[in-house]
Length: 156
Ligand SMILES: Cc1cc2nc3c(=O)[nH]c(=O)nc-3n(C[C@H](O)[C@H](O)[C@H](O)COP(=O)(O)O)c2cc1C
Image 1 (cartoon, rainbow, N blue to C red):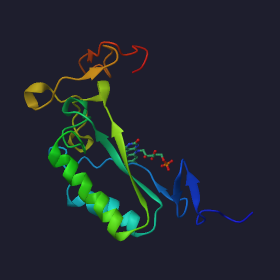
Image 2: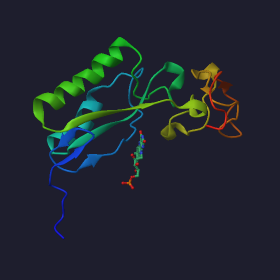
Image 3: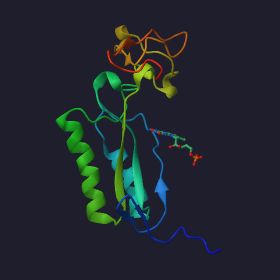
């Protein structure tokens, strides 16, 4: 059977020129959640190379939903404009699609970047309160998150 990697495919009405999809790859390099040149270069290189669909890394929907302070985010106008700049690059320079992986870290919020040692980042050091469906902490060195009323506590 011939490989179909370079054949078009339609997924939920999206007609993609081939079947190459770039998975989300978190960079921990967004200053205050704003996508920078690194994000444009990182994502742009894949679409310019012909990938049919390139996904952003986890893109956080609120400041206290971020896994770490340097995570890509989409809750301010500045962040929206920065992600929009990447979308414009896709439109201008490729036939590939751009996907944004919306995310909420839940009890994983307020972590230190892995290259800074990982683990919990306390509020006194710039961390923030975590919200999650239940008050079950991520690990022994993380405080219990504040449960969100109405959430299913079996979801963690
Ligand atoms: C450096 C790195 C960053 C990642 N960041 C994310 C992420 O932001 N969101 C996500 O859902 N998965 C993330 N993943 C998981 C990948 O998207 C992918 O699902 C995983 O590597 C398994 O795919 P593979 O078997 O092709 O390697 C990351 C993986 C790596 C290696």
